Image 1 (cartoon, helix red, strand yellow):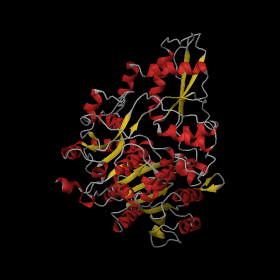
Image 2 (cartoon, rainbow, N blue to C red; image 1 turned 180 degrees about the vertical axis):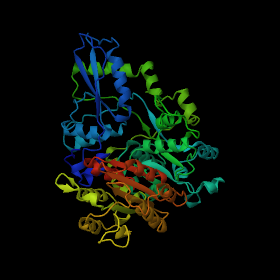
Image 3 (cartoon, rainbow, N blue to C red; image 1 turned 45 degrees about the vertical axis):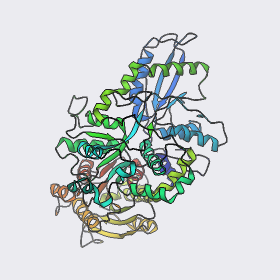
Image 4 (cartoon, one colour; image 1 turned 30 degrees about the horizontal axis):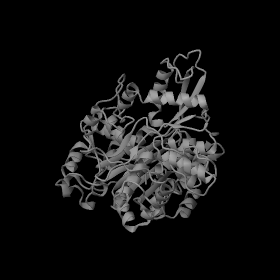
Length: 595
């Protein structure tokens, strides 16, 4: 991602990496997909219209473009257009448009379809900072909508709804340590929730904005002075204190929840009572679209325990999927864009959006959607207005001081295979450098420790793992120094080390922090003294009362990713696939964004 020529911080997903100076990984978060829209072109279709869509709706837009190209539509004045769709995350597209669209390898678009008008505001800010005419000066029509909701397993959601209309603070700040006991359900334990990191996700950013609006009890005109108000920051801090952990992609959380539901565990073994996300994902989850699929099935089984959408009293943020015609469009392309917009907002195409859980372009929900996710409040939803882009910039700049802090033990594989070459460096050198870059994104108030592990060696004669830096106040300089001094040798005592590291953090559990073990390994368990995977999975299984989650990075193709994934899931953590060593930087940044 090319940084803007200003000192102000850019947002989402590239934001975190660029702000920390991780230029080497700046483009790695973009999920780029380009497919020919297909259709049989007519001879008079001489107008080409390039459309760039956000990734979550790109497959549908490709399908609709194909339908448009084969529809036989004609433009006023004669001729017809052929639409081609490519895909890029909204944040990456905004920055590429600001930089002249030279680094994607994709056709320069005349129409942009981001997830939210937050992005048109961000692009306008970048243009203004560069002293050029803004590319997105207006408000734009929507092709679909999806409000932000608090999704909860149905028994919990129904119980919360019985209390009547509750606000963001009353739900997400639910009762502090008393948790569900205040609702007559002490067996449900503490209330914690999941949300996407606002530096990585549009919905995570929208959730953060929504809590600020709730704090000031307004639905528009959020100001910088509001952000500095101690009462406002305390409100936001109280909500963030109940976060289980931050996600780089809420869909992964939902897939894990669906898998647990399939085998009968449901949400009872997880520590999360709710997830803040867009309404469409609640629908897709409940319809089985995010459940494990059997061969030949288009979707999985519907979950036994569906989610319900709880709507906070103050209102919510809407992801409005604007249709943006860019200045790069000439007169005929503008006519084609207007015709394509009319096509997308026609009832037939709107039904296609509805089948994916979207509300229509006028924010109306289908009966099928409401039957799946739950009815909305009497009188409909209240929507927050997008804040000024400068206010959002300041909000993200201050969020790191308000987010929940972490208690993290980094466990680094130093077995002999880490001496293998990756280019002109060893695996250990590559992994150590990636760890240093990723840890640069942590907060100074986080607590971090470092272990190394392999098996017993002359340098480590008494056991397979060793404490390099004691878990305590984050001292990145010391951690970097210790990782640089590590030497590879021995086998891979994966199970024994994960078990011991998990117990170590559990013994030092801090209820005010996210407690986690981060394991980086390039191999599989090679330690005959401890090769019982079933016992390890039982030992690290999440205790919702004292959750310690294991996050794993599978480094290089020799890693046993499937086993690391099982270990992570047992603890409600996550495994990151860096079996291609080129992805190690990306994996570390995504992992660190969970804290």
